[in-house]
Image (cartoon, rainbow, N blue to C red):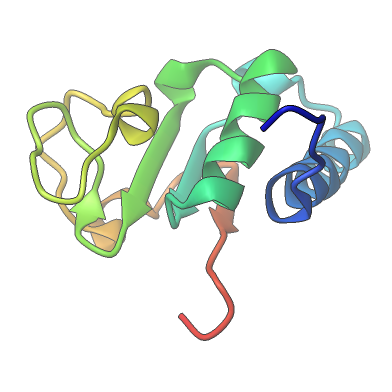
Length: 114
């Protein structure tokens, strides 16, 4: 496009999630570098949230992404794209159930009707 665009599904969701995590971390006196995050959903909004959180200091190594096909892992071919690939982990875990225990935060970003 030849004009700037504000994509509210991505930007609006990302800034809201970032504000919630930023303020939540203040309440529990934790630093973002210490956070472990699991996300259920890897669409445009979820990835925009992750991208912003990484810019705020959340290490990519501390993020586990899952989608409709399970954990986004290195070497996975099904339902992958370059945006998800940035968050692929070297792990044997394949399901949300396997990775959900233990993170500081769990985030779910889904399309309406999903």
